[in-house]
Amino acid sequence: MDLLISFLVCFAVFHVAMVLSAVCTWIERKGSALMQDRIGANRAGAYFDTPFIRTDNLALKPVAFLTNVLVIGPAFSVIRTLGMLGVINTLLCDAVKGLTKEDFVPEGTSRFLHNLGPVLATVPIFLAFAVIPVAPNFTLFGYHVRPQVAHLDVGALFILAMGSMAVYGVAIAGWTGNNKFSLLGGLRAAAQMISYELAMGIVFVTIVVVYGTLDLYQIVERQQSLWGIVTQPLSFIILFIVGMAETKRGPFDLPEAESELVAGYFTEYSGMKFLLFWMGEFAEIGLFSLLLTVFFFGGWHLPFLDLPAGVWWAALIGHVILMTKVMFFCVLQIVIRWTLPRFRYDHLMTLGWKILLPLSLVNLMFYAALKLSGVL
Amino acid sequence: MNLLFIIFAAIVVVSALGVVLLRNPVHSALALVSNLVGVAAIYAMLNAHFLAVVQIIVYAGAIVVLVLFVLMLLNMKVEALKRHEKIFYTTVMLVAVAFCAAILPILHQFFGEFNPAASLTIASGAAASGAAALPRVEGTVEAIGKVLFTRYLFLFEAASILIMAALVGAVMLSHRVSNANGSSVNSGPSTDPSTTVRS
Image (tube, rainbow over all chains, first blue to last red):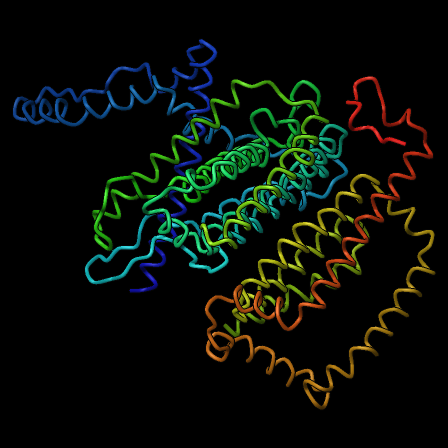
């Protein structure tokens, strides 16, 4: 039974990651269309006649009528609405297209490493979800359920470790592309991720100093009365910028700058392997939104709302609260991506090394001093 | 647990061989990554979560990334490496023999008579019973932190000073190189004046 519960928890957390990345894909496609005054994906699944059941048999006519009104009519109007909103296009058609496309491997490179690239870029991101609590602990039918795959006492560090492993995916992808554009994209991505990881690590240290624990569940519980954004606003700003840079999106998308590098490190990828990079990217957006919520916005806590601990419906409400906050940050990141122009490369490096890194160090010193003097 | 240990130990050994035997330096670097991650997994099985995560962050996540970065920048040809093959392999063999000679007394101290089968049993047994045998301290991070900042404080500070000196040395070296090239390399028209090297 314990094994079944852990399996279900794994399934649920993986589901959270997949749904976050799917919803982000849809928001990116349709939201960017809205922002640019386009219509966006609205064709696939939107225009077709509802296949009503017709019959000449008099005895079956009432049955057919009821089925038509109660099942087929509503079901197909839902499908049509989804089609008009572009959901079918972005989530179904693109996936089918990716799976059925030719799998192209450039000449003169290792097929194994070429396949390994997207896997290494995606898997660590999904692994990092393992230490994130997606809801408060609860008891159901006498079984104690902890909605967190791995309850590590080094949870925050595990996320850093997985973030640093994701560098290999883009570096290998750039290298196996076997052309200048891919290689430049891969090198840019690796340099950018290494540079911003330093500031991220120091912000993580600050968070650990303030909350006194590395366990993400404990960090959430310590914000019950006061959210982290009130106690450490600068850490939030730094982590938000670093998160945008680590996902290689928004104003930081130099590794895939389409005006100079075709598509950067995944130029030579096609079909599902190309889509895997996208999935990893959107899962990373979801991951960073979850982290920001867990570190600074109280996770499943809302001010003036005291949910009873350990009850399943309270956990469900907590999960909805958490996911609402996460969706807010996902949308915010996508809006920023479609609003700000791209950085110049030296500006990017200056921001990382000369602004964010010293700023995060000062921030760390400040909170360490506060902690030592007993204020926190 | 025992099965997991054997799997991870096999990964460690095979990838370590890969680091040495693979022709392409990039492939070797990637084999090194898998080796380090395998070692981290064995640490994690011994309940040393902190050590495992730090192993991944520092070695797999930072050092080998830089190695790979340089290898990709240089884009070495395998033919270029073959030229010095003989000297290279002689040196490697000598270093390997010296290392084995240095490590044998320690192995002897641990396992007594050298017996590969027995040592494997001991090691896998330690990994398997790690969760039960080790005293469950209140978070291994706290335990390591306390030991590091009390008993080994001097060594810790000495190591940090050493790393700091290396850092300053690296900055000085790159300073000298860019000065020798003249300032024209660094101060293009688009470069911010504050980022160029002064003096």
